[in-house]
Image (cartoon, rainbow over the protein chains, first blue to last red):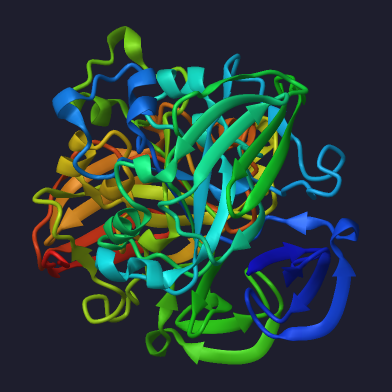
Length: 264
Length: 264
């Protein structure tokens, strides 16, 4: 089942090309139906927090200049993205004229894409063991973890590097029926394949990540967890078109806007 | 004016010992009035994000082992706390029997207090220059930035160290009439003075911090910004009583709960 959020904040289910409005995420039909091509899609979550895993594919750790030999992380390395970073997804029926463009902020010269599988929480989780963690998942969606790589190197913590306005395009919808450890994540920039990772190569599984987070941090319904990016990250320029495709979910289309000027 | 949040999520104004209920933060009276001693106080904000300054008093930078000579930060060093960290404040009329105790989590052996002045945003801010930043402030309250110092040293990013459940007692209310650069922040642990800093000693003023954040991150109404801690941070033990007093606001009382066991 594909769950989506649209219009002024309504929820729906996608049936073919029709959006069947529901009274909540995965809820009951209200009777109203719309053509998918006609609706404005919104970020399919309203998270109180967004928790991300920094290094969860071996080859990405290597490309970031870290030798992993004996040093494979023993626990997920987490960071946060703030909700102001969320950018509404494009409508896949008109991908380059809808959705929110990502601003290219004044403080960076090195904006990067990181395509990722994202988890949307269904039920509150606190101290949930790995074997029960997936019971609390509503479903899966697609994220571009936009990163100002130069600011990430420069700053002690990654607030500016990861949480500037628009740094988290998310969507276009939530797929409830996915096996999170058996799918491909592929990122294309201007139609060229740049990242390709299979989620079976994750160092920490989705269940392990969620259990770990919930051991000290209560996860709330519609919170979002990003599961890390495969190798192949790289630079973005104003006007670039990014597609992140996750097999079984669909494709998230994102444009990079013009370079912003310093505000004062 | 002192603005508070209480009961199931209602807002009010404190007049002497009376809570005058209002229809929103700093809003119009509803006609209902309560004795302060009888209400359950809540965190006086509902932030979409909590942005914190890491090193904003010179002597605290020094005590954390950093020589500041030429290296005084040129920009505020930010980190995030997630909203799950918020802990409801004690009622100052019965400070040791009300409010939420801070859990002492299983993953740390070195829990620290950091007493701070906190800012509550009133109006949305995006790219607001320093000279206009304070116009967007609703008022000021008091925070304990609870920190797992050992996890902070160990982890690349400070999620576990700063955002475990209950790591941000905040309150007891918002004072709208404070001069944020002309007040004292004092922290007492078990009645002993441990931290004493004057906000005129901040490296970055509140106006500079807010303007800096808003240059890349839109601040929303009721978002919270922590302004850094003065020198004198130190360890906490289960059962400890913390008081953070900010002249002109009042005192936030916090208890440390028992040590939690590993969840599995």
